[in-house]
Image 1 (cartoon, rainbow, N blue to C red):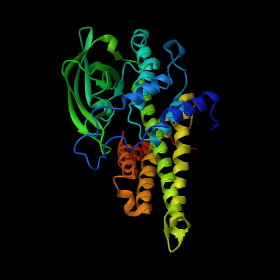
Image 2: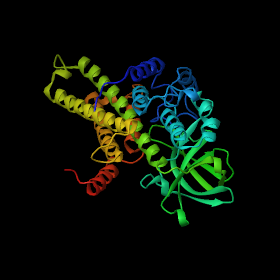
Image 3: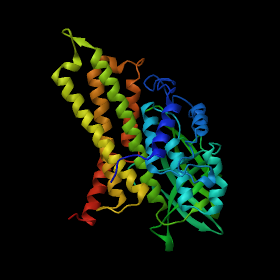
Length: 380
């Protein structure tokens, strides 16, 4: 595997740095001081700038106005988003559009992708399941009725659901199709779809999605085998990229603070106990980075490996979840009481880190999944 990024991938990262350069992580009220969500919707001005820089169509083919890039490029952009706590559905929107392109029909692609690439149509994904601790595809059932489908079930903690035009919902089939998963493209205003407000640790507005005999047409369902597994892998890997960017910014903040804060006439960064903790967190970051690019490369290239792609994704999520938690905890410790000051952004990074740690499943869930994969595909 070659970790060298292509010229196009580096250009995407550079464009993202330009767009996110003016984004302030404390542009909304502090989640520590807010009852309920910190804002009703996402950052629409930033969304428009991302669209103007062609970063919403990054994975789309040229026929749909995109750059035709891959998961690695998307993760480079998401890394920049994580550094500033960007309040936009960039991951969910990009992954959903890419899944429509890769697994949907031509009619679906023609109807959705051009507008999605311009940011005129907002997509999100219901990927947490009923409780957040079970496979998302088992939380909703899909059954055929006439030419269309009926959906029933509940999905929790759906990000940006109140802002999205379409929610991609994985659903399992019963009867003769038992065991299969389809992706339903459900309009937010669909009859029988009810949203109940939830709030994440970061203060962002989520939604419990309740589907009560929601009817969707045949052109609103993706039946291709493997579509959900591919989409889920991309979502998890993108979450790891957000965690990496967040962790890098937190370690930089900690280095700057400990380099200036003095005790006994010396910067505390020169104390062995402080330096050792910072060095341990730097090792966490490098492990998070290496496992992220391994997973993104497997998704982008389709290259074979000793384990299925899900194995590399699991390793990346384990490191991201554990690593980002250790990073923000150490940062809080080394900042002392200053880290809890609500006028300083570190506490916001801590809240976002906890959300990313648990999003799409905690480390323990992926350790169990990795164990199952190793049992089924013994190495050596």
